[in-house]
Length: 345
Ligand code: GTP
Ligand code: MG
Ligand code: NA
Image (cartoon, rainbow, N blue to C red; front, side):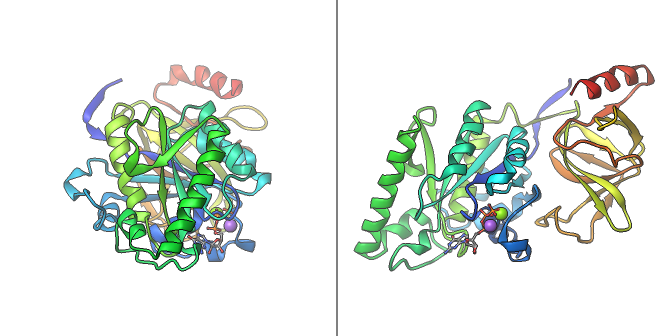
């Protein structure tokens, strides 16, 4: 496939972690939305997806030490939100299976919890690089928030007891990770990313450290993942959710990692009763910094390039199975092969 090294796609990021550690809240802070408040019981029950354009990253990273806007070469992030509740292991697996990089959110007050462990196993199994968000630092006793500051400098300006509590909780979590065979260290002290996983202290609620974690991901992905992030024409697309929406019928939310989708493309999907062959009628995409889960004014597209999260309208989607690839049929003589591929999934 033709590969143009100068065109980078957005890295697909997956947010993983135990229930209520603050995954959705962190996205809300990045988006300036309130999706978490609208969730039933405050529990995420579906996969979400949001594109965060480079400009939004640059805005958020303004006060991060050593960060300059010129450093951002990627067009943005595509962030997948996953549920932390134990009953949604299949969604965590699906969400993490196609990501380039993950954010593992750990509640600094709780340390490693059961779904933290489950998430670590998924990441290790697939060799997915990740960063740990040491979240809810605002709950440290006496913590004074300032989301405008570089978090590492800001932590040093906290009162002594707050700094001590941070150190104690931090060290405890280092030990918990070590018990899983993983070396973790604060990001600025990480001199060897092959040996150590970086941790970034954050308050998803108040915004402290959120710029630092975004800057870290920009830098890390451009430095270590640039080969993977070169845009290629081969379609790499996965069905994330099959959703029935009033007025739209059954639609599929897909993550297009690479390649191009166009209206009128013939696509082949896996269905419960065998392969589905259908034609794309419309491609819908939420505005930047909007969540695909939230019913909103989607914008219509004739053509879309990866990485992007879009909703596809087409006939016969009722029996489509989520978590599996979408194939595009470019030539009629490919159709039978693709149907067999869809059948074998
Ligand atoms: P699931 O998706 O259900 O697994 O949860 P989640 O990880 O998305 O956590 P969510 O964003 O729903 O946050 C859970 C609760 O923790 C909410 O009440 C948030 O307001 C709160 N919370 C999240 N982040 C922070 C934080 O940094 N500080 C404090 N104090 N509370 C937070
Ligand atoms: Mg959530
Ligand atoms: Na929650």
